[in-house]
Length: 103
Image: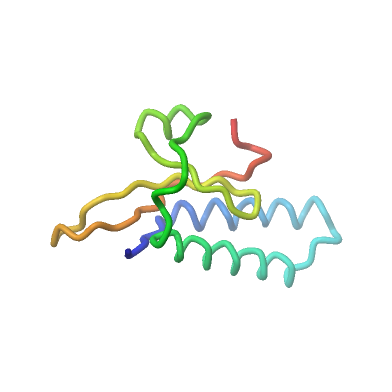
């Protein structure tokens, strides 16, 4: 199944690691790029097993929108199954937050 990742998700990942690199001088850009690459690969494969993850339980917006919660590399990702213009099912990844900030 096709997966679409909203720009806000990519921005959340980028912003988190930008702050992390500034706070932790030993965190290299190479390490961050490898983590981001794994995150994007995991999100792209979410279409194969999206149905096994639970509904969101902590963020009010995620609960209200009935989004599901996918955890990978200490990031929580909110996603939902939607229909595109041609009535094909797609997985839309709506939001992301690091586990340290997820409450």
